[in-house]
Structure formats: C-alpha cells, structure tokens
Length: 153
Image (cartoon, rainbow, N blue to C red):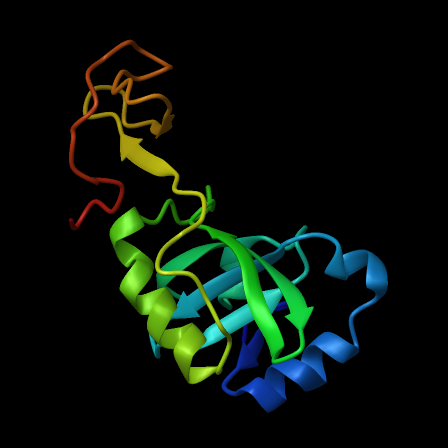
C-alpha cells in the first residue's frame, strides 16, 4: 500500500466517522479526493497529493471537494476536477456522482468548477486551458479540443 493513501468512504456513516475526527481548520478547506478504479471515494486533507490519496493506483477521477453540514446531514458544497497529478477530464463526473451517491452525500449535477486539461502534442507538457484558449503555455503550439492527457486515450 502507498503510504499516506486516502480514507475510503463507502457510506454516510463512514463519512460521518471520518469527518468528526478532522480538526476544524481542515473543514474550512476543500479536501483532496479521488475515485479509485473500484469506484470508491477516497478523501485526504487538502495538502495531500492525489496520487498518494489513491495509493499510487489509477483513478476514474480526482480533484478537490468541500462539504457543508445542514439539517439533513453532510452535503457537497463545491467540487472540482483540479488535480495536476491526474489531470482528469470533465467527462469523469459520472464516476464521481456514482461514488458520492454510494456514500449518500448530497451533491450538485456536475463539477461546480471545471478544469480543462490538455497535453501539448508538440512539447508533451500538460496545460490548463483558460478562457477557451487552446494554446500551449510552454511552446505556443495548438492544443487539441478533446482530452488527451492519458497517453492511451
């Protein structure tokens, strides 16, 4: 097992047990999350690396997630696919939705903040596309319109 891997959240009870052990300072920040190949949600403190949270394994999605408590329990307050370790596509949302539903955590219908990642075909560097400007910040090469970070994609 990869040292520092995230805590597996399989139910609302498991989330409740885990979140009550978090210091108040951690609850004010988003957490690092991954959805593992098994479809399970894993959480770690924000300053954790996504690859460490995943135990070094491949993931279906990754990003940052924040929670709020209301009368009905815990709910996802905000969520993004911001992970420079995995650079997941926004199309990974259905895997996240299934993991959150299994954990019985109320959620939005998509990422509340979407990050568009692309790998430059020229210099092979990873880029974050901002304002629909599909140009590599490293070499000024054109970036593809479709996600291509995973070399097998």
